[in-house]
Amino acid sequence: MTMVVAMWCRHINDNIIGVDGHLPWKIESDVQHFLDVFKEKNVVCGRKTYENFPNRTIEGCRFFVISHNADYELSDTKHHCLIANQKDLENLIEEDDDLYVAGGAEIYKMFMEGKEKFKPHIIVDCVYEGELSETAGQFAEITSVIETMKKKYRQITPDYYLDEVASRIWIRKGEFVSQEILKNIVTILEKNAVLR
Image (cartoon, rainbow, N blue to C red):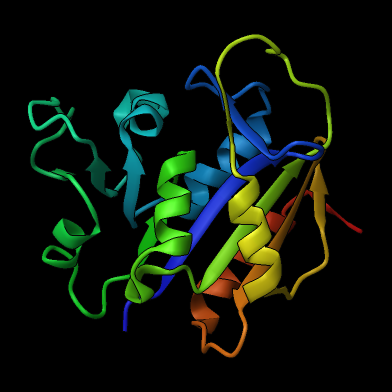
């Protein structure tokens, strides 16, 4: 069975995850958490998120980049695949392959509200409690996704607080989740963090 994990970092008061396609804060530990959680995984993301990863890759990752532009150029055609939607993904993911959803806003919405098979079993909800460094531009927010999470998921960990980011894990109500995946994520989040 495919386990789906979604991870995001959102601003505490407005659920903003980006401004003009970029993070509106710079927190090295938050970026490192993302890289560590996604390392050597199957990662699905949109074009803008893909372009924000260092060198458009993460060590050992197989990327599935969702874009409506069939001519979009990937940085690594051997390990990265361009897809148009979840149906394309269904044909490329094996039954026992886990999948990690990296955003952006429309991608999170697609997975939270789309096909049952691809709805996240585990959510890593990181909440930035500081000020936005960019306040002008086109905002990307995930309020509807957060509302769905609060209705259909339950928080199973305390907040791991580090550098103004509170990270917590939610699981889908009534679902089995991989203890191995949970243990790996908890190990990453608790490093140098304060429990709240």
